[in-house]
Length: 99
Image (cartoon, rainbow, N blue to C red; front, side, top):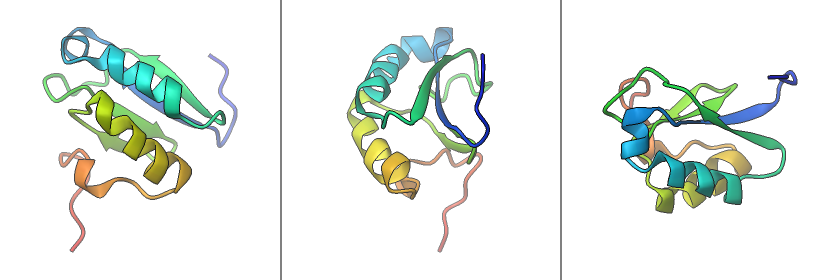
């Protein structure tokens, strides 16, 4: 896989557990809604089994878990286009709430 420096990617886990939790639909939604400059990648296991579908936005290393296809538009608009992660949807294992 060729990666352009500073390019943004959205990795959507497509491993067994995430697939059982509808990650294929989440991937399809990101492919539909994401800006053209953002590469959407069907990834292998992201190592957080049981918390999915897992989504990782790079290079910022912002994690989202238990993402539903209906939530993808919010992530796309606020985070990918607006530059501000959707705080209420962040994966708490890696992101703490700011007060």
